[in-house]
Image 1 (spheres, rainbow, N blue to C red):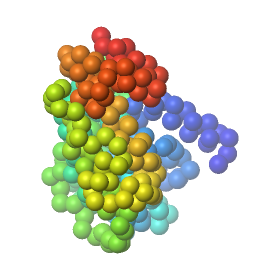
Image 2: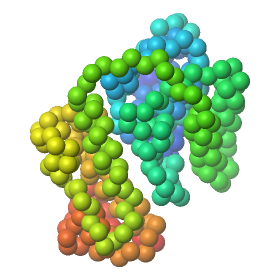
Image 3: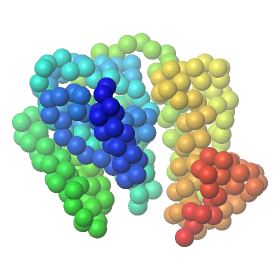
Image 4: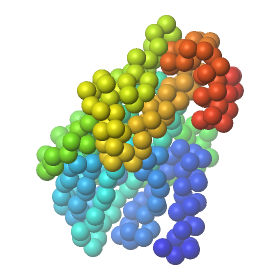
Amino acid sequence: MNNETETQNCDFTSDLKLKGFKVYQINGDLSKIPVYSRRDFYKICINTSKSIIQYADRGIETDGTILFFGNPIIPYSWEIVSGEHEGYACVFTEEFLRAKDRSDTLHESPLFKIGGTPIFSLCTEQKNFIDSLFQKMIKEYETDYVFKDDLMRSYINLIIHESMKMQPSENFFKHKNASSRITSLFLELLERQFPVETKDQPLALKTPQDYAQSLSVHVNHLNRSVKEITGKSTTAHITERIIGEAKALLQHTDWSIADIGYSLGFEYPSYFNNYFKRLTGTIPKSLRV
C-alpha cells in the first residue's frame, strides 16, 4: 500500500470515528475501497460481482447482486472472484444509529444477530431501490443540512426494514466449529442482560467466570473461543457492553449515579466511578446535562 493510499485510509478512519458514519461508492478498483477496523463498526454493503464471502464459521459463493450486513464482533473476509464489481457501502457505529433510541441493540436484529444470515440476493427491482437509497445518502452526506444525521439514520433503518422483508440466501455451507457455537451462546447471553430496566436488581452475570458457569464450560475454553472468533477477549466484550449501558442510563434516565452503578453490578458508587473513569477517561457525572 503506497503512502497516498495509507493517508486516504487514515483520513477515512479518522472521519468515521469523528462522525460515527461514512457512506461511499465502490467502483471496480479494490485498492480504492477504504480500510477501517471491522471491530469498531457495522457495515451494510450492496455489491454486484462474483465473490466468496467467509463469515465466522460459514461461507457463501455469490454471483450477482447481494446485500451484506457486517457485524463488528464477527470476523469476515470477502474475495472478489470476478474482475469487475460495483456497489455501495456504509459503515457506522451502534452509538450513531441508536443516538436517540434505547430500544433493542443491533446484536438482536435478525440481520446482525450472532448466528443469523447476513447475506441477501437481490433481484433487479430490489437492487435499483437499494442503490437509490445509497445514492441519496451519498448526495445528502455532502450537504450542510442541520438534521443530516437523522436523515442518514432513516435511510439505514429503511434498508434494514426492506431487507427484513426479503428471503435470506440459503446457499451457506456450514463448518463444525465448537468455538463459534460457544461464542454465539456467550454473546447472546450477554445481550439478554440488557437493556437494564430496574435499578434495584444488579446484573446477574458480571465476569467471564459467571458466563462460563452459566454455559457449563470451563472459563479458559470460553476465553479461547471468544478470542478466536471475535478477536477480542471475553472481558473486553463484557466491559464494552457495561460501559455502553452505563452511558445510556446516564443520558436517558434520571437514576442517581449510585443507582446506575448498583444496577450494573457495582456495590459501591466509588467502584463504579473508578471503573468508568479508567475505561472512558471521564467521570460518570460528566455525561449528565
